[in-house]
Amino acid sequence: MTETPEAKAPQTPPGRPGWQLSDEARQEEELYDRRADARDEYESEQFGWALFAVVTLILVGGFQIINGLIAFFRSGTYQVGRSGLPVNVDYTAWGWTHLLLGILLIAAGYAVFSGKVWGRTLGVIAALLSAIVNFAFIPAYPVWSLIIITVDVLVIYALIAHGGELRENRY
Image (cartoon, helix red, strand yellow):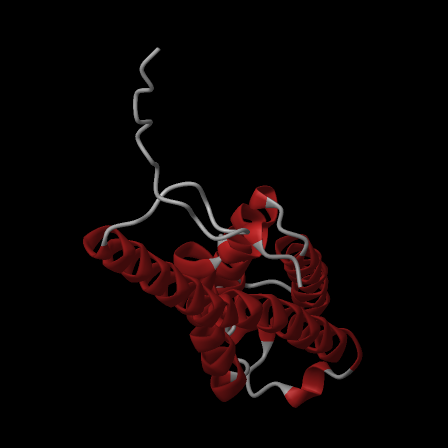
């Protein structure tokens, strides 16, 4: 009986896979890993915009509530009477508008933070409404209204462009 020589397979050290990677495949794998790390780092940086949107939504909601309370209790603070506003209503109506809008903005901020898609939608709509209401309120409180409008535009940008990061990452 003749013995046939068996083909010897290259032995791999223990703890390593049973195949050997070529240098080219190893370089491609390292490049893939570096790109994945860079993508993760970029996404973690973009998370800041989403967090900015949440904090600012809650902050603008608080400002709207304060503005509503001022309209209720100290309407003499405003520079014009109700006839000088684009919408000729009493400051009590403006107070309720600002108060309800503030509550809506705070609720949207918490919903966005918890990663809800409907929260992003609500946040964009509420920030848009806030900008419109403050645009109509410019004659009564010009500097404050312009600041709130600017912040609302930044919130809308942050929610539309970067709000999705909160859906994936819960911090």
